Structures are given as C-alpha cells and as structure tokens.
Image 1 (cartoon, helix red, strand yellow):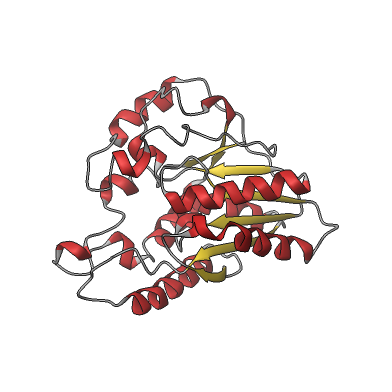
Image 2: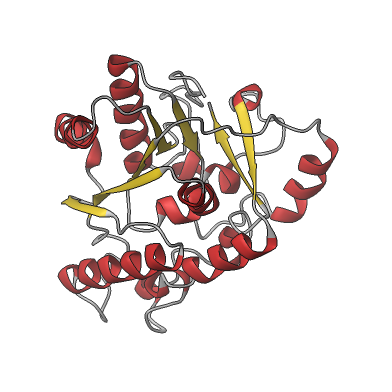
Length: 265
C-alpha cells in the first residue's frame, strides 16, 4: 500500500450517483464478471502492519467494501479500529415509517450487530451530519488524528472508502483519509462501493493500475453476507411507500458480495 490511492474522475466531470442514481440500472454484475475474469490478476493486498484504522462515511460502508479485509486482519492479530463518521440518518428522506432520529438509532444497532458478526471491535460512532460530511473536513481529520495518537509508535495503515466513489460523503471521507495519510506518512488504501454501479469496465477515469485484491474464503464470504444483511434498513424496504425503498437493492448488492474485495492503493 502507498499513501497515494487513486483519485478517480475529475471533480467537474459528471459521474457517480449524480449521473447514475441507485434507481437506475447502472452496470450489471453480469457485465463486470467476464471483464474481471479476463483481465490479468491484480496484486494481493498485503497488510504488514500492527494496526488498521478503517474509515466509513455511513454505517455499512466498511462492511460492504472491506468486511473480508477487516476480518482477515483481525484473525492475523492486527488491531482493527473502525470509524463511522456519520449517523446515517439521511438514508430515507421523507420516510413515513421512521424519523431521522429513529433511523440513526437503528442504523447504529445494525452496525454493532454486523461488526459482532465479523468478530471485530464495534465501530467508533461519531455521528457527524449524514449528507454534509464535506463541510466537516477538519472535524473528521481531528477524529482520525485522535485515534492515531492513541498508539503513535505502532505501525498503522489507513483503509478508507474511496475518494472517487461518486457519493459526496464517501468522497469527503476519502479526501480526509488522503490528507491524514499524506501528512503522517501512513500507507493508505481505499475501497470503492458505488463505483461498481456507475462506472464501466475499462473506464479511463478509474485508476485500474492502482488496484489490489483480497480474496475471501467460503467461510469469510458467508460471514460477510450475513453481516451485510444485518443492515435491514438498507437492504429491504421500510414499507411499500416509495420513500422507504431499499438503498441497497439486489442489483447493487451483487457487486459487493463477490468472493474478493478490491481496493485502490
């Protein structure tokens, strides 16, 4: 890993969820699979550290993008510290079923359940405003610095949601991670989530040459599947009302339940 993970499309290019919302078909997994199978294999991700600090924008990002990596790291004796920046209260605006406060509380409990299933320590929950993390760069950097300062002499790597992922909160957390990693000379890798929905194979804006892979064995994959489905508010509709639709419908989840996880380094 290096501290210069790929940055993705230029900020002024239309991309991501703004151009291809969740309700759109996006690029189906049936298109990704033959492309992924045909290309030369990526190098394996090597976590040669004693501590892994994992950053997510919302309660579920880290499990979706890096659940297998986190579990494998913990099994080898690496201390895994997971930071959830936002409270997740804005996933269903206008919901007639749950208030934002109720949703935030449920999502916190869902994340605790998921990390318990992955056999890692529960996430540190900071409750910054969901949907406006770009306005809280300094607060997020301070949070990460405070976690790093707990063990300043321990070899540590950062693993963050990708700064080019096409969701403003994801990109804000990724930029924060890159800032902290660069300032403190720490290795950094970044996991994409929404990219698989809006990007296409060989997309020239994606830094494919900076990817590395972590393979999940069947047991780890089964545990990750179970952990993902702990996020009931995200993978299933809250009700039949259109405002209560699933945030992670099957065509999105198909990209995130593969027997490998890919990260930019």
